[in-house]
Length: 263
Image (cartoon, rainbow, N blue to C red; front, side, top):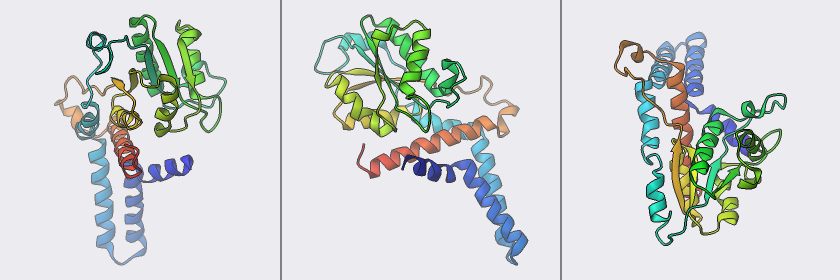
């Protein structure tokens, strides 16, 4: 089921969609007398590709997700006790995994994806600033290899985090699963939720739907180029396409979660 969802999502991703429209246009140009349809489709695919590759547009779309939750203010969190009905210190830091590589010959830090690595670094930073806190690493087994949480824990240990300060949740297979298993660990206690800034809106809504109290700690925010309005930034780039892909994935995930009543 999970693989089918990924295949469907990939089929309709911005880059794939542009290629599919272009192929349809070329088929009309080569095998149909309706040349105008083929020309229109090819032109449409080209325009969509340029627009999605322009970081000024795709970056603003991803920013619409990231701007919903500011970076965490630990002093404010600790002053309020982390929740509306408690003055206890926040002791849980939940870090959501985002994929690992299946190559067991790689060092542990290279097996985790870029987003997982960034999230883990933020979780460790917060853990060191909160004495007595524990890190909950989430993520079950993907298509192959060890559970994501286990691999992330190996990286954390190499960076000096004690195994006794980590709790591994290795059952979840998708974003919607994380709240179900984390709930059994934190119960009704507030906790700091660490995930990518673009992923935070969906994650927070999923956890809150389960009656939990996440304190958002977004990380890995998109940073606009320093000279954003320079001539070079008006050309499409692979970075722009990647931002468009991330935004598409998250908005489709939000839509799916809403339709299924998960948020």
